[in-house]
Amino acid sequence: PQYESIMPFSEGMASFQQAGKWGYLNQQGKVVIKAQYETADRFSDGLAKVSDANGSCFIDKTGKMAFCTQYRSCENFYNGQTRCSNMYYLHNNKLYTDRKPRSGSMRILFHHLNKTGKTVLLESYIKGSL
Image (cartoon, rainbow, N blue to C red; front, side, top):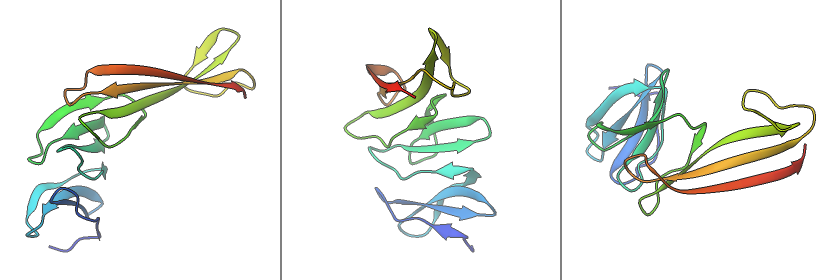
């Protein structure tokens, strides 16, 4: 098979791009998870984040979905947790998620998720004036 791109191995798996989609190879070069995703991050703690038109999910090394998430950003797993976040803008006591108001403050909520997608810790960061 011919690949457009192959990323470095992590936990015995490397993401590859073929015909504009991403999948995973094992260290023997065998396709383990076919190219079907728009993005495919590296494996860490046994899971990798992938995304398609429906959103982002975490999969295991067989391609089985562990859980899906609606957060805008998620980090790689470390010690059994991933940190995901959404940004919110606060102006005149109203939250905006789709656009940044001209003034106000920015609030980021970080959700630490376990391998089933449950929030195990919530942290909040508030940035002053925009």
